[in-house]
Image (tube, rainbow, N blue to C red; front, top):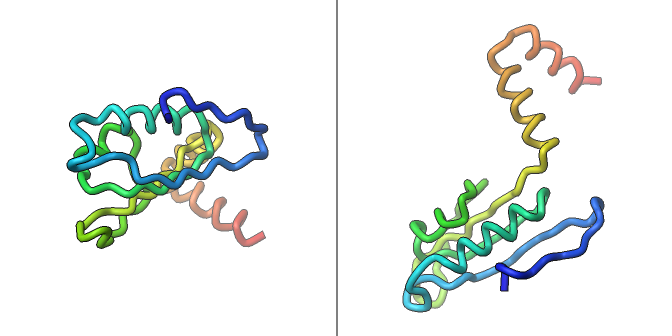
Length: 116
């Protein structure tokens, strides 16, 4: 159960979740999805690939998918949602990248750093 599962992991371990959480007729409410979102947030750096037949339920994760792929699964049209849970370091880098996109000097400096 994602609500109580905790992985004892070192900072070098990678957490990858593959799941087909309840949706449609198998689920009356989004408690499983909320639990999955809570689990993922407890593991910064984790990646998750989730099958979802109801995208409204996926909002219960409180995470934004990095990609969505349409699939046909057991006669249903579903989405395969990919999530990457950012670490604090990833968020800092993303904020720096966003700031650099608006400052020509920082863009040039980033280009030079990437070329080295």
